[in-house]
Image 1 (cartoon, helix red, strand yellow):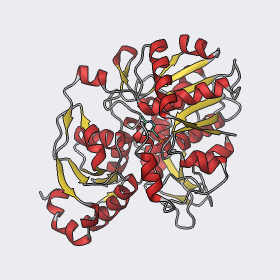
Image 2: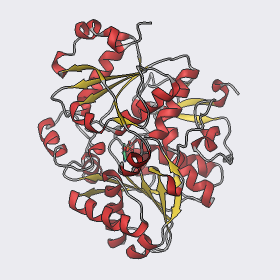
Image 3: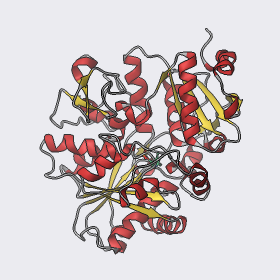
Length: 425
Ligand SMILES: *Cc1c(COP(=O)(O)O)cnc(C)c1O
């Protein structure tokens, strides 16, 4: 089947349809959503996320061990007084069959994205990242020999490594004296524009969202049902939107009878989505930047530090919360650390700071009666810490091709550095 036959894109705001790989609606701000020709849920017996190939944009696939493991929780559930808790584990823990090469569910986005764009003859991409996205795309770029320019704030360099030797397919731009992901997004846009490389698209890229949606599809494959509640820590909320979209597809396919409620958590004091939802406000990205950056400086889960989430647009996080009767949570560092310790002790699995925030939100919900004791609940452990990856692989840092202060990035300076940013062959 050709990619054109496999799916079309439809704007959630105005229902205009487009051919892949369109990123924006020409008429409104709505997200474009995949409409797959095949609407039955027929996962194959592949063990990675390509078991759900019918509902992933690329025609091609990969055998990399990328995907979610669903585990039924005993001890942790009992400690919370819950009787039907499942864990979606999307990190790296070969002991339970989880092989995600960079240790988070960002691996679900990167490989489908690279395959999807390549099938549309787009042979390189530019993107911004504050952390795990850069790792996942750097790895997918090397594995697929697909050139990617990655722009990251200096603060994220420390954690940017991959479990294989980097090649010059990855062109890393480091923003000196910059801790702001929103600045990295702007600069990535400018670089792509000047050197003529396509923007990856972030939350607007359906390969990214549909890749993330496979955590819920894996649950449906195992349980043949939808959970009543889904818990995840969010920065952009892309994973939450994707989970809502997967749930809609599953309902159409006859799996489940109602949408899972989304329980979305952020790391206090930086909780823009929680504040917007709780106080019914919009997120004004340019209001109080200094205050937001100061809050970001205080949180453990830096992968959640997104100042410009796709919140109010049609099909965005607000709509996902409204459609699913969802809730949001603010979790302090102390609550998250305590939750991580409790979880690791009970389940014998390490979790990362973002997953700890989600875990703490489940503890809040159970204590506050926001979930029923017998409700089927899915807790998404979106990533774990790096200890097991370090045990099993030599981890390689990626040498930057350009170190630059944000204010020094201009059209002229980008042109001067063009040879370092794109392949001169
Ligand atoms: C990116 C990330 C998140 C947040 O995901 P979004 O749904 O895009 O907001 C949560 N956990 C981990 C480990 C991440 O890397």
